[in-house]
Image (cartoon, rainbow, N blue to C red; front, side, top):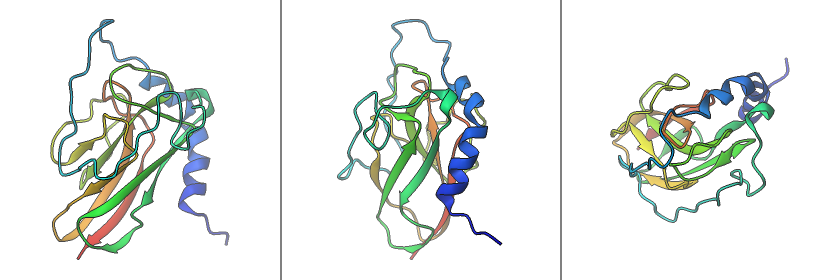
Length: 174
């Protein structure tokens, strides 16, 4: 039996989700309306880096929704760790940019702590369980309580509407 890595599975499923990504492109706001949301929850900028608009998490030109996309946690890996811990997020075929303007196949990261992924096209809540990285950050520091936690990495468009791609890991904070 062939074993698949998390990246292989996400890459394979990305193509199947390509048409659904197009739903992340329209937020229904009038032109010129700005997003005033700030990062919330237990995340801090830490040593966070941001990718310039128009690039994916690897610094290359972002792909359109038609080409698919995937997201992944580079850090942490599933397993035991100590708080606070570094989170590093990556996107392939998806442009990471600041919140505000809605661009097809583009948006910013959200880490959902002990929450289920948000349905595609629905607004991602802004509370302690839904950490927003509206500044386009791809790294951060999380400080979670002791115990087991499920982390879901899910991008949202510039208006914080959920895209249909995500990755889920389980960590235990010692």
